[in-house]
Image 1: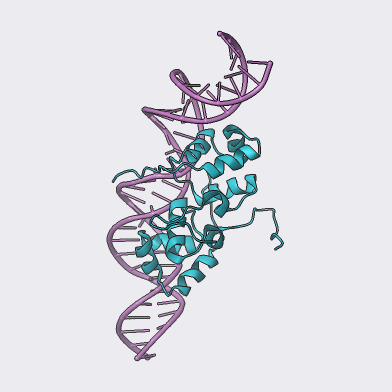
Image 2: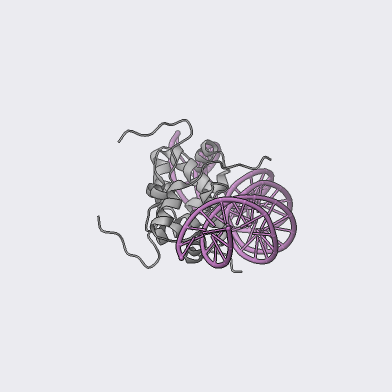
Length: 80
Length: 80
DNA sequence: ATAAAATGACAAATATATATTGCATTTTGT
DNA sequence: ACAAAATGCAATATATATTTGTCATTTTAT
């Protein structure tokens, strides 16, 4: 089996983090996870669990859609 | 380490699935996952990955917030 | 009441998220 | 330019998500 390589950086997460003036390490501590985990999620190198996504949302006061939504592969942006 | 027991059923997911007139097995096939995985997520017995949540959203034409949002532990419902 | 389909439950095996440690590199402030 | 802080990167170890297979129970339709 080929390992799934997630190539998409999570810019929205990084922006929400710096808005709150937190380093990766500080966010990690608040969320209860290691610094590396936060770094890897931001750099798009893996696939967090739903619970972890939710904890991050709670700390950064955002919703899942705001931090983690991505449009489906073939799909273009939805019209507002 | 104690295994995390997720006790919260995902009713919203089940409702979206039946709206689309899909069995767990049919949804599983469309999503590219096993029938058990869908069943376990609906019954709240574990913690899917973000990618899996997104694939389910795409098939059921819902957003992450619509299917997977849960308010933070202490928090009451947000006023609309 | 009956059969078929759908779901639940369980165990063992596999894949992968996450932790931990250590060091290299980059960024930031002075 | 310098030091400190922040981030990146890699390897190994562990926890747990997911698969596969099988059987029991419930639901649905006839």
